[in-house]
Image (cartoon, rainbow, N blue to C red; front, top):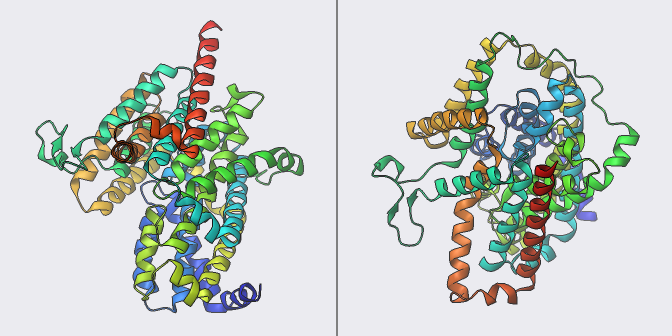
Length: 493
């Protein structure tokens, strides 16, 4: 506690406080603009952190991280386009509420969920970092394969009324993920002879194409409607005590899911938000309302994706294992100060560790205050920008973001190609969420499955001998059975 109090005093130094506040706001802006990401925001500020004290520099980058993930809810609600990958699920109910004239309520619930999820992740970070990090080491290829398999079954619940379409889109996404060089044999595969596909299909440009470019194309069909959503003031943005009490189980469940998945290296907030949304939908009395403007859907998604921040920082700080792309960028931020995350950081630089803990919670408070109060005056501007102005702006910003990720025109062409594909699929009422999740998780699933098969010597019995894998396989079978039963009931109805 003494170390934590000292860290609080150090962070409340005017310079440190200003850096954390500025970093958080910078991250929110990047997260709110489709095509820009928290990862890019962190990378841009790493050179600036070099001239600062180590604790100040890393604290600023932590603020950028939290702001970047949280800002995704703005574009998801106001534009129907996820500002960050982990806000994809938020679009389903957030944009629906905005079109009903309840954008303020949707944003307010999302920001509150951001704060709740971050706080749950923070509690685990400061209390259980060493212990939980040791448990994460128990997850080998077999366990990770089972976790990802369970994640794929959760995607089925996001497929609307057709389970078949959801399965087809997931399979298509996984097929796209196999384009390029085989990770084990290093042989080209599924490139159709096009050399530009040797490096595979980039996930972020594909996601931007499916959710941003395709949505922009769809909005162009209705240019006679001058605005994307109806006129709305961001009022009624604070959740009532009744709503908070009713949402408490959702906050806790989704926060725990997000933290647990965040701890597993490389899996990230996208899967966490999908699983949390799926579990909340299953627990709801009226699951048919989800996707049509259900507040609890926004809360589940946003709580989980922010809780992954604390979860991802646990293996990063305690073991030196980046949990996602942002913590991989943070690794560079530490290393330019001559520091390496891991047990040595805890034993020799505990002041740095506690500085990160305090910067984390302070950034959460700054995020909440800025988005709930300052955003009240800033965000409505986006509501009243006419389509003929905002759609070209979003398209240009998205494509520039794609180019900046790889400094290659190939990323731009991928975004445009997937934009056309997404537009056509939307016309035929095929769900896009399973496709992009199949593309994002496909390489990870293939890698872990092949490693698991090598480890098990081709025997499936090894999957049943692992208690952790057995639990997730049982959850997979149960989840699939429930989804199939619901599909059968919908067909009968």
